[in-house]
Image 1 (cartoon, rainbow, N blue to C red):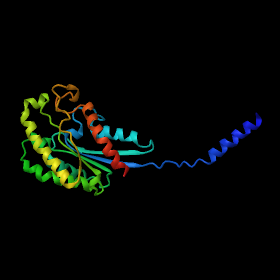
Image 2 (tube, rainbow, N blue to C red):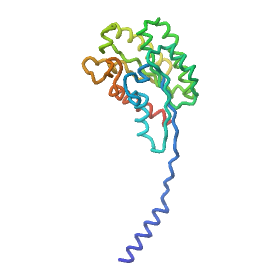
Image 3 (cartoon, rainbow, N blue to C red):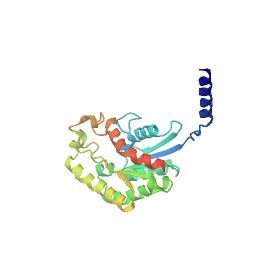
Image 4 (cartoon, rainbow, N blue to C red):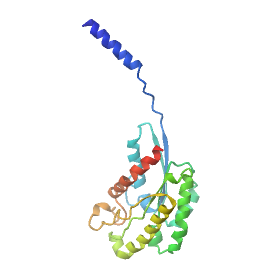
Length: 229
């Protein structure tokens, strides 16, 4: 019995000494989200918007020692020109590992000329690329959610909103395909708001925390892949 006990001690010591596991080196990721109220997280809590939920979800896929820095440049009511001004004012660094861009709904809502969007959107994607270490692969473009079937949307155009946003989103999709940018289709994110109130924030216009979680489900695999590179 004594010999067996000594042998177990020796085996344990050998296995401990032969452990070739290496300490995990902490990683630091910088994420930037550009946009309007859909990025700002209007009418939901400070941690309920999609950028914050995305960072939380990403952190669960990485090591506990890894850290994330999130910067959001977005305000409710911003159209493409407001966002351009906002980026210039904030003057962010150009070393982000991931940049998301969601913009355009206020161009439509404010009845701005579509030519504004045709001019501004490519410029904003180019700016996003510059901020993402100059790498297209680090940029994710998100199409514009259709708010037609919300209480607010029904009072401001209903089906006309859908028709106009289809034009915007078609432009976004075509631009991304022609220029090799990744995009996530969020047009239907809150499209069933009239029949599924769970998708809407208390203001009956913007996405709820739950709706944003569904957007994050779409974003997460691609965002994770980008950060692994």
